[in-house]
Length: 408
Image 1 (tube, rainbow, N blue to C red):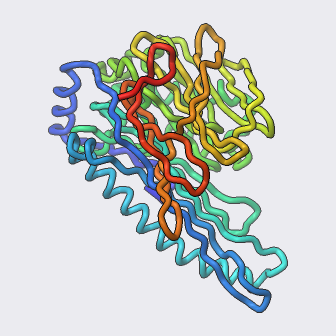
Image 2 (image 1 turned 180 degrees about the vertical axis):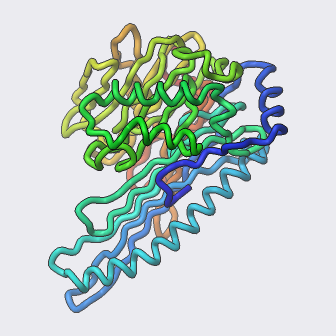
Image 3 (image 1 turned 90 degrees about the vertical axis):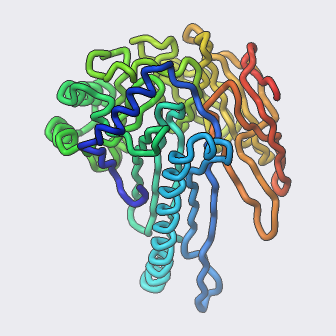
């Protein structure tokens, strides 16, 4: 939930919810869902003094929403997501009012060192199928201090009911899980100056306060700045794959969707298993002044593509083909999607599409933006690229045999 820097998992879940979940999952493997998007709101709050007009606060709010088709298919899930997003929006507007006043007072007090305040709220999917919907909420605020502050929070919902999914539904041995998290953090961040790592992680686990998402191939745990290490270490994550330690998970979570698409932030690595085994793979994507980089299992492959605002998605097909769809903005301000195939440790360019997941509607006085999440590679919404000031047009697409698009 917006404004909190950690997740409170449910310590106790109802037997009814657990029974319903188990019965549903016993039937067949989950099927990836489609129909999730985020609506983006941007606003600038301005002030005036003897020097003229100045910016007080820039707010960017992106909240998760579902389309009409998904809402009809899973009404309880749709209602739960919309209620959560509305609560976050209402809280953001209360924060906006308070921060605008604080920014105005701060400018009066230190006019020579003033900079506008910032509030950035974002959301990104991690998993979406007819078992579980899992996503991340992020909030960043900058109120004129030495640095801004941010945090990520996992949200895990049972698809059929919209209820929060407890970690104790998924994991049979939380004691063993806790030790695995500690070991993975030490392995992934060998030089990090941890704050009492073992004691902190064990306390969070005992209190049901681990911050996590359920991914297509495992669980990822998130530790925000200052939780277990200094701010300079940033967000720390630990991923435990289902097939690495099958004995600690409830068995129906080991049967996951044969095809799925998983968005991930470009500035953090994604840990998964491309072959759906106990072998882990890491993927990260980043852009420089003149190049686009994809790092697969430590090997950096670069292309002379000067893109910004990268939004990558791992696409896993049921025949175990793997692709990266990376939506980005070119120097002319037009969004496109570049497609790579991940095969035998190599990253191969397949093609560049004049498409984007950003849906733009040009209306007065400002454009409206919606970002459509790719979660099901067999059918998703894609928009034909358009320059600034032009509306986009939506097509229904799927990932074809060559990794590019099929239509209809």
